[in-house]
Image (cartoon, rainbow, N blue to C red; front, side, top):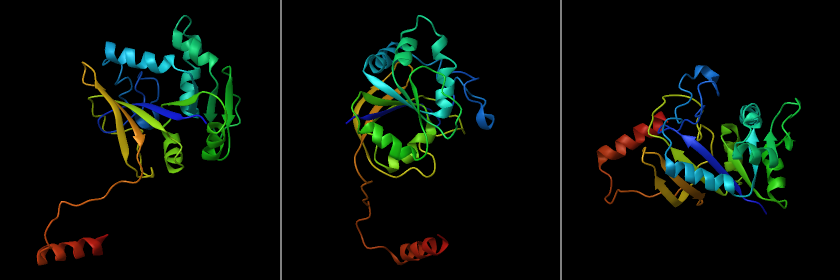
Length: 220
């Protein structure tokens, strides 16, 4: 069985839209595209070289696929171009428009079911890049095995988020972390079951606290 490994560049407020260039994804009037491009250092380059040097197939949403397909096939001489051309690119899409990039395979219909079938097959791990729309269904189905997140020291205020409304709750276990010279936190997580619930309250609640709780419950 393959693993699904998700990678994303995030702002401090969880936005992952258009990290690479202003023209990448201006959807919704987003004007801060290219917010990650000035913050790379040798550590980050080495980390991503390790990711790209591993064996994988790509798992992409249609918007990210279109961004990649319009860019990477034309970067002659770049090692990532050669890698991305060679791997199988599984694309979750509701469109019937052909996928023109070599070795591209459409996943239509129930995305989680289609991805589960691919995950259960023989082959390399599946690497997600970008693709915000994939996460709710994959997290709900428990299909993501590992996430590596690069969190950049910027606040964007709006845009497409990794953990948007509707994403299933759950705990994550930190398995590796690094910090770049530019303040980017590179953290790798694995799912760790439901969110553990506790309380700092150690005494019986006061009458005022009970009244506050009742007021909150009534307003909910």
